[in-house]
Structure formats: C-alpha cells, structure tokens
Length: 243
Image (cartoon, rainbow, N blue to C red; front, side):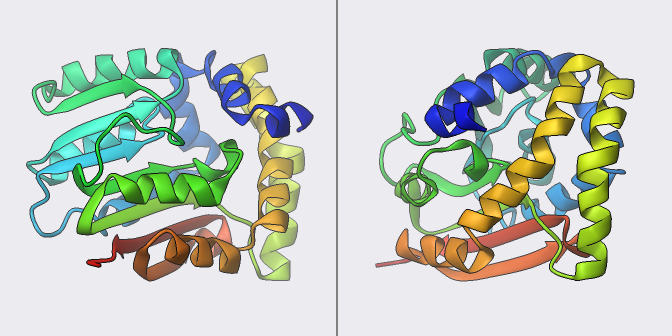
C-alpha cells in the first residue's frame, strides 16, 4: 500500500505485468461472471448517438474496446500503462478482425496524448484507484471529450448494506487470495491479497459522494450512478458540459 501511494503508476505496472496470458478468463471466474455484466452496463451509456471516435482508458487486454467495436461503428483507441497487457490486447483485436478500427497505445490517464475535444465518447475501467490524484485525472479525461460527449466508468465498490458488506469482506480477504492462487498462481494470489484492502481504503478516502462532485468539478453533468451486484460494482456515467 505504501508503494501504491508513492508511485501508483509503477505499482499498477508491476501488479499487472505478469497477468495477461489468462487475464480475461480468470477475471471472469473470480467475479463469478459479474465483470461481463458490469462492462455491458457501462458500455450501454456511451454507445448511443452513433459516436465516431471513442477512447477506452485503462484498456488492459482490450476487453471493453472490443465490446465498443461490436456495438458501434466508431474508431476506438485504447490506452494503458502496461505493455504486456496491450500485447495480449493486440492479439485479441487481430483475432476479432477489427484491427482496422481499434488501435492500442501505451500512455497515462493523467497525461493523455490527444488534443482537446478529440472524442465523442470515453470509457474507463478500474482506473481511479491507481492514480495519485483522481480529481485531476477526471479533468484530464474530460479535456479530450467534445462538448456534449458521453463518458462512463466501471469500478469495484464496497456494499453499503451491512449484511452484504460482511460477505464481501469475507470473500475479498479470505477467499479471493486463495482462489487467485488456485486459478492463476502466485501473481494472482498477490492481486487477491491486494484488492480488498485497496478497495476499502479508496472509498474511505473518496466516498461515492466525493467522486460525483469530482465528476461535476471536471465539467461533467447529468452524472448517474448505478450500484451493481449487491454493491460490489459501481457504474457511473455523464456527459461533458456544452459550455
């Protein structure tokens, strides 16, 4: 946790660099298939209105970028810190036959290499826990959107209901590290040990109400929030102000 606070970008690279070969399968197994449902809900808020240029931030192995390619006719750019994840993503894009519409680049969410107002829609997934300044990062994401463009995000969350929070805590602290090891070995066990405490610490510091205000402060309006899977997932969406 100290390393994450000191250099969240480097920590994220170290955490995810060994994972790509079975990332997509294990991700679904450990979430009991909920990750797919959450992604579908997130994408449903940005695939309207025939967007032509879309950005997927923290694209990883291009899972969301591929959903966007299936659901729209847009040209999609995926950006991520971790080259190993992007190599896996490139292979998936090639196999899906959409390499003419999906390009993947290495870069930071905090310093996007795109001009102002470049995109009609933007998605980001499991991002804000890995940046030093979530509010500034949201401003940077909003910068590259055209006025009126849509944005949506997916993140893990902590259930608000005490009953479900108890079972969530038991799963993330007790079951997830063991399940990670069984399905993916030591690297996934490390992820399993990290996730629960990290998610809890993030929301202790940045409650959902704070995050909504940060979206508004970044120039994003009509912010919507949906709790998923008894509170284990959080989908948010908005549009960039026309002003």
